[in-house]
Length: 278
Image (tube, rainbow, N blue to C red; front, side, top):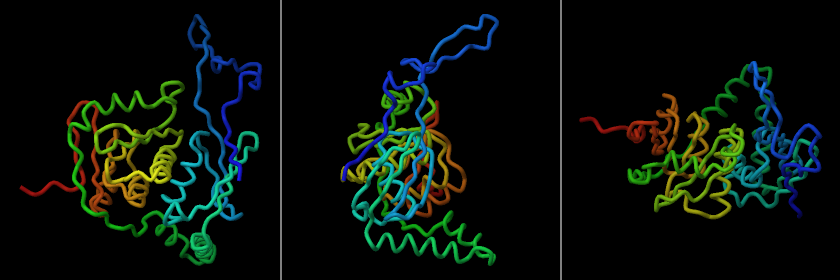
């Protein structure tokens, strides 16, 4: 089936007050100087599985098939990207509808999850179900060696170079994959930090890359949801440019996920696995 992906409007399709080089602005200064700037694109994406509407979210309109694959896996809607048979992306003005065809097994599990949530509303248990969603049972990953310190050297600068959208407009997060040789293999960007990691996971799975032969990098705050997504994807190591939360470290240790924080001016800090007692 054809796949239609929305792209930024051509110059002739833009509104008259939006020049090709970006959006006009006036500086709030006595001189009232003017200029223009490129801004990050944002669209609403509605996802339906086998005709059943599941989610609507705001995303950057790039690498959407990667996002749908990664989101479906990271949210636990599918066990493998092979459960996805087809994706049709159809633009609707400032929105895109994603019609996803999944296996009967995945669709049954998705409907059962929705049925349990709906059946418990009003009985005092819906909060428990919500907690099960927020704090799910996850597999414990096999132990994996930490990446060499040389692969982390100058990583912040290399990440900045890889972020093409951020260099143009700013306002986006990035998730990247550094392979076993220390090279940045993939970079995915999005206005949402979760979305960026979903896109990266989707790209890794669709390209059948070995997710344990290297590590993922996120430029955003490292929250618990990112740990869930990394574990479900089978990543062995997650590197964050921002400090993790305490709960994030606890879960990373529990699930055997290597978790490293890369501060601006200090050496990389390994939070998981926990340091051995001296």
